[in-house]
Length: 247
Image 1 (spheres, one colour):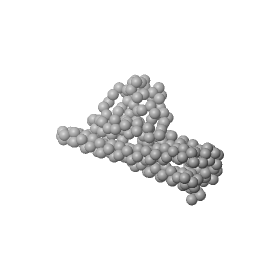
Image 2 (image 1 turned 90 degrees about the horizontal axis):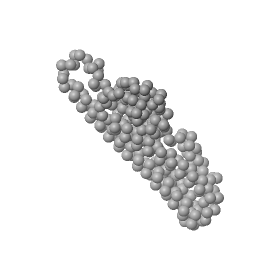
Image 3 (image 1 turned 45 degrees about the vertical axis):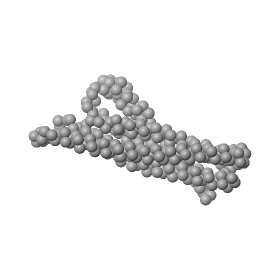
Image 4 (image 1 turned 30 degrees about the vertical axis):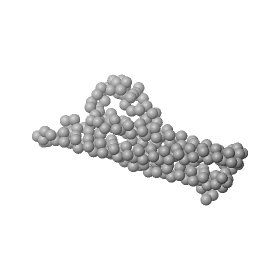
């Protein structure tokens, strides 16, 4: 293996890594559309039991409510399935990034055996950076996606769990603080139980509660909070200047 081969492999690994990141971004957009539609249907389900939802003229149609509930549930199930499919595709892109990261680590081992530690730790491979410095950058970005895929899984699980007809309930401090996974609240800077009226034993209308929870989940998915914009932009510039710019 020549040093030129090492450089070509590095460029190939980073190219595939960046390609997986781009597909991930597209899937975020797809998932947001699906999740938003699902939350809207779930909110509709929450209104079905309200007498104000049904005009008096419809009271003669005794099975109308049941048929409407069934229609909404089927629509919610289909949207939930679509959203889960999108997450599966996203997981596939994460697996590709993990593979590229592992391949880079193996490449460092090969380069060390072939050319010595000085080549890996001291000799610039790209414009100015060594193989080790490129590896540090790659591993750091992959770490962000590792955190985000975990959060995305929690968002999916929470939306699937919500995919049942909501019933009124008395919300106390114990239930309010567990309405969504802690990591979702932490990532979004959501209100704590002590800053929420429901935490002190107030009756929170299901529709309002569900809407608030739904907005937190949608916001967490949209913003992908673990994927720090500054870090990603720096990595993109790093790849372009150090390696891709030489192609």
